[in-house]
Figure 1 (cartoon, rainbow, N blue to C red):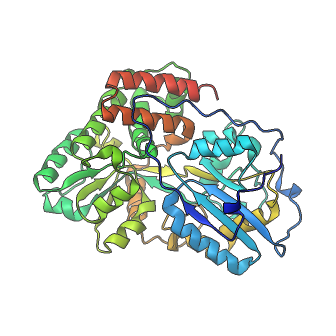
Figure 2 (cartoon, rainbow, N blue to C red; figure 1 turned 60 degrees about the vertical axis):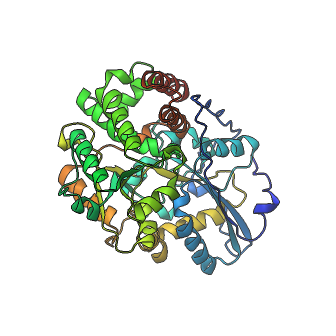
Figure 3 (cartoon, helix red, strand yellow; figure 1 turned 90 degrees about the vertical axis):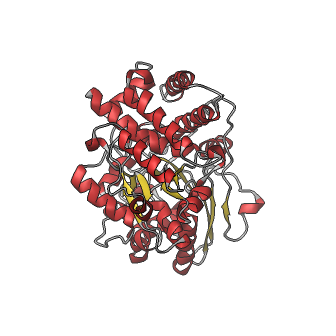
Length: 451
């Protein structure tokens, strides 16, 4: 399968397009899952089958990925690579809200990006037939083993079908100065303590939360904390609980951590959050938290710290898990690598693309980029200590309390997008809790149960 010519807009000199996230519909309906892409060739090629290096020849690489929060950092990376391979042009495009749908449309039309992204874990197999197996590439020698395990096929545990922009910590970012001013000496570890903290923060004239509920992906970041607790309290793994939902064998109402605690938390965040929660996206969260109007920001992680410090370099950033039950031990951060960048197996510029990602993961600049420029948990082996508070505090919390499971990787983004839209309908009042739970169960089985 040959990649079709890109549009004139993307065939010129290097272009960076950061598409504004389109708000998902809030009319109570959940979007049908995009048709699974069909491929006409296998992509199980090994690194040994890659064509000979041709870095001296002109080449254009089309990079279409999610995670627009890394746009500035990736632009910096691309500019640096120009010094290494001046004849290589990287056309970089990024979006967030509709990424899964847009990607599948490109794949179905034959316009496979040379570099594209997906969630790691379950989605490795969803796009495996399009993805070059990076086993044996130089980057494999520097990749963190925990990251590599998330890039292998869950079906057989084999292969290396992606790289990661970052490892990650997921949890709640909070303003230590606001907490101190409000007389809250310790981050609330239980659901009852969180409600009490919100009352104190609100009484002091601050918004307890900024939520970003315009973004579908914020909901999956929050939900996974409660799902981990539900699985633990049921005596099963998070992967087993997800599988039960996919098979239609579980109901949200069977798990109080989900039916009660998660929905109560969403209600609490709406009550004590943004005036227009469904209109507040990432930029709104950054503004509200960075300017000291909100005490906590939901659904974000280390990737936003640089932008927050650009607003206020003296911001006192705190980081912790979500209080999910009345057991403080279950207030844990989540650690892991949730995103995979895939290399098209049928790329017309396969070798230049491999040269780029190998340079990214093995060069001194590339390895330092993760901490010095992107400010993330490095997915490569590194002795460099991060200066970012989310990373440092995430390291400490993970060491002292352990880290919960990165359970979002057991589901596809097609499901997560639908889940976010269901929750947006709940917040808008178009569907009550029971109707929302019924949709969650039905759509989870319909979308991911079929995979």
